[in-house]
Image (cartoon, rainbow, N blue to C red):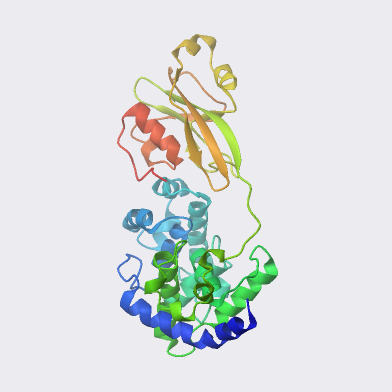
Length: 365
């Protein structure tokens, strides 16, 4: 960045917080179901759900979770399989397992009350620096910076921060600048507004394709002045995608039971219930007596995308007697019971297709 622009960006730092706070109050998002509260349970739940997931998807899940788990004590007391069942379709299932474990630790270590500082919140399972800061700032007005993906985009553009964020040194420097930007007065009001405002800007205005005309920070934005909004943030290290083919045996009985077993963790769909999985059709066939091979019915293949992996799924349907065991581990689960279990989204969708049972939750993710 040219020295003149760098000096200009540094000089603009004190004005940024005031502009964000004012904009959030007038034009930010103020009608989301987890807003207008300083209840750390609700804020924490929304922050975990919103990781890698769109607001429109989270709305329904958030409402269902609160209906079943009204507070952290109820969540901690529930079986983890029930939590995974309600989470089914949101993806990134380690979030649900950490959610339950975190609730248990809040009850056991903190007497049912969330810690009030970002530093202590980070000691809980599944709560990283930015999530901890969001809870502390929104609920307890702590003067601490958030730096999720959307906020990184806002701040690197406004400041013209061209450091490669795949390097820890540059990541720390951006945290330092983000902390320097924080409000210094009326923190009980300004910290929640500012924190929410940065989230709102990143989600609705300073998107991948920004709408600079309505951005309150446009007059101060270095990237806009340079006409290089797409340059930021800079991160050169790319995660390589991989691919895996999986054959799924959708085994069911005449009365509608489905054969399911719990997946090992870590691994694909770890901790979730799933039908028997195989590396190829030959292995799938070998798991069944030969007289069942003629009954195998191959369904249309589909692709399911995980964060860094593409799964090529080959579902095969078969009707079996209850005496059969399609895999070493597992059990026949009644048609009235399996929809409540934590199932991978594509598996739930396939089981709905072959069983005709009513769905449970949103399996679109």
